[in-house]
Image 1 (cartoon, rainbow, N blue to C red):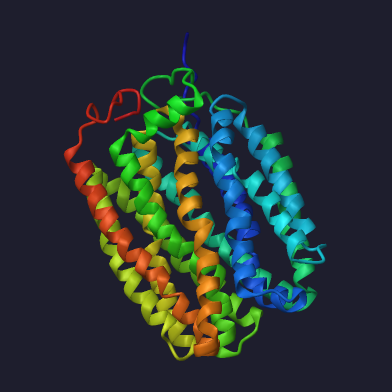
Image 2: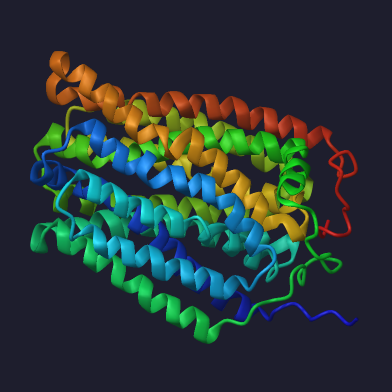
Length: 432
């Protein structure tokens, strides 16, 4: 049977643009509690541990557990319609979050958001891999992942201003409406590509069972090591995105508009620029071996950890902002490289599942525990340190980044010394 030709560049980048918007809505709806935390805490009389639960277990547990079966389905069904359905559901629960009357109700809406979001990223990664050949995936994935930084701008900068103008309840409403519109556009304008269309040979039909697929992916050593390295990075990401705005507001006596404007804009510009540059550099470095790009990430983790320590110990908002943005930008060198590793070392018919495995480990080791741990440590330190307790608790974040540096260095060594045949993969099939 004759294979479908790869998508044109224009069509491929149009789909990436829409998936970029999906990712923005995904992250913005998930992280918006971070900039609203102070007002929600006051109005609903919550503790830091409860706020940490909203940003951690409530949003992460079901995201982790359901990601695997949703990705298993995405490797077998119409991905475009699946993504659109997920967007509509999580946008609805985001809107519902502004109508709650207490902690339990708000936690349940966060659970609803997390369940739907579990299907978004695995399907998106699978689609992008079918639109771009291997030599151009680094840039494509970097552009897509940079949406996370734009999402922080939307959640922090725009959300902070909307919060001060209309209140936190209407901020949830404003965050949910764009996703409903995007779901309609996606279904109406995007055609489902053939799996493996951008690879050297067509992807076989996904036939292995759920556990057999998981076992095959987990046996791939470079993939497995990358998963742990990314998880350590994301412990820091979820800790700082949930708690850094509240730390700045408490420590420097500022409102959500001022803090959200500086942090949201800075993260979007510094983090987004770093992601795109990393993707371009990765495409160049990998000509001499993918391990070179991985070593670059390991080095940047050392820069990130040092900058975050300086930020959380800063005595003024300007110093805090400068070092925080340096730390965050350096940390954002890891997503583009991690997605390239995933796409290189996972068979085309398993890429959605590979993404779900990555997100499962991230959720269980970072998304679920990090916000709650920071909040709980802050509560424990509060009697002795008062307002400064949250800053001291946040020092756990750069400690995780130091661990990530070691894990990335180990991954680079493995990739340098591992052939594709040793990984149990077919080099021709995955386009190398």
